Length: 131
Image 1: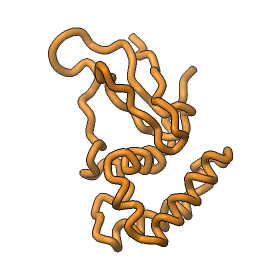
Image 2: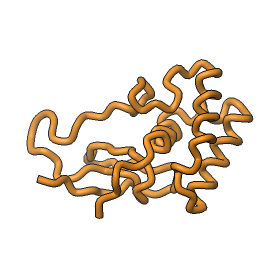
Image 3: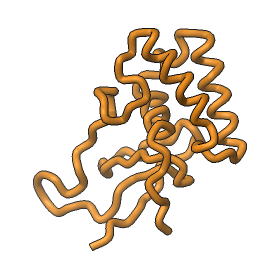
Image 4: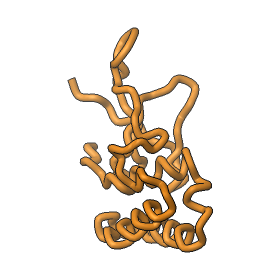
């Protein structure tokens, strides 16, 4: 099953929940907005329908001095992962991705560690790489 490209900003929110959760909980308005976005997505609403909420969260992050906002191309911890197959040894045969295919988060496998999606509280799922 091909999950498609996923939602970039939901993927970045998921990474931030894992890497820097205190940033998202420090401000009451930001925490409430994150809780609302998570509740909507968990309730089945497509993340693409929440662009206004993601814009608002981005504005709050930027106003609070978090220059990375929700842009996955910026320097948020965890945003840049080694590409699967880069480096020594044999390339991995799969990547880890959003358990429901809603966001664009993708990580290289790491022996002994299965990262979790904190949006849906599930482990990331294996997606086979195509030859």
